[in-house]
Amino acid sequence: MKPYAAPLTCLFGLLFALTAAAKPPLAAGEWPDTLPHALAGCGVAVLGLWFWRRQPHPLWAESSPAEEEEQLLAAGGRLEPCLAALQALQTRLPTLTVTAMAAELEIFYTRHLLPLSQTHKQFMAGVAQEQGLERLALFSQAELWINRARSAAGDQHQAESLQSLEKATASLLELQRLLNGTPP
Image: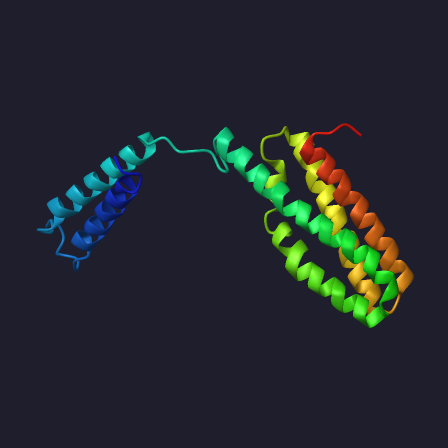
């Protein structure tokens, strides 16, 4: 049975029962002539509900091991260009003015970090919850430091911005190490 057939049957039964029952009240002791239709609609709704409950429902965020491996490779594949761009930016920034630094950080954020942050939950794929949480914490830490560097550059604090970028790079390198499975 199609996964949408049972809910639609239940909905159809309820709608049919409600429209059949929608009739002005009669005098006391009389039954409306649409009562069998309303009861049939209720029966169809109950039958649809019964079929719906018997369907196997996947757990939330349930996926196959192959899908998890694919997601993990996709997340790791996005991390490497982001890390390379951050390291290249980090070597270029000390020679720039603070306003140019802020503009470069904004470009880096929109081109590299934002797409990676939209898929950050893929860092948890294929590992135990504790390891996944450690990966998410490292990514969140790197994101925080990059945002702090952007803010510091916007406030004309070049030294603080460069320090924040160093910490962000360290967090992303540690995340890459965890994704690759290499020991510390």
